[in-house]
Length: 161
Image (cartoon, rainbow, N blue to C red; front, side, top):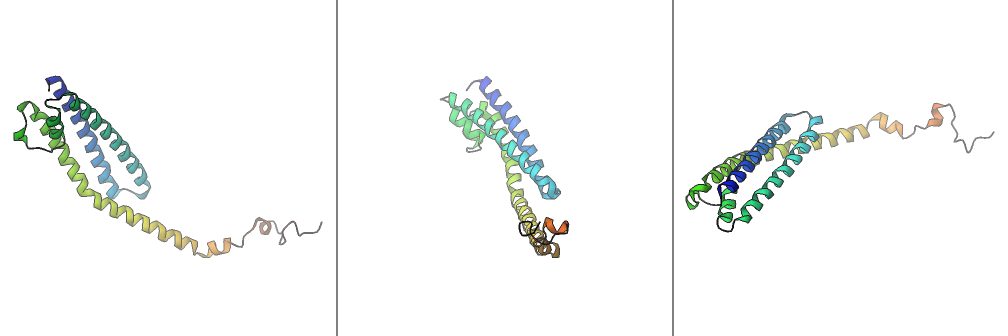
């Protein structure tokens, strides 16, 4: 693998790390944000995942081009090998992959807390809906009709001219 491909992979890994760090920030915000902001952060995280997946595909294509070191380089990116197994020229790729792996692990550690928060908010909203549906106004609204507001008690088709 030539120096140009290695530099391109390292650049993509740097961009990928930045996307992961932003994803981590949105994940942290999900834990403490107002309920009205949850959808915004979830959508932003989804957009970042798409960017990360696209960068991964670009990295995979660069690695697939090189028959000699491509597999080792991709293993280095994904932290699927020991650094000692790699040629020295791939050390930068391995180190960048490790940095991304560290951020991804922090995010994985936060996910259970986020899922718990989302489940709590969902249950809370369902309870409020049930309470609202059982309220006096909700029961009275079953008997409301526009005719009552206009002072007519009979449906217009039964009223005599």
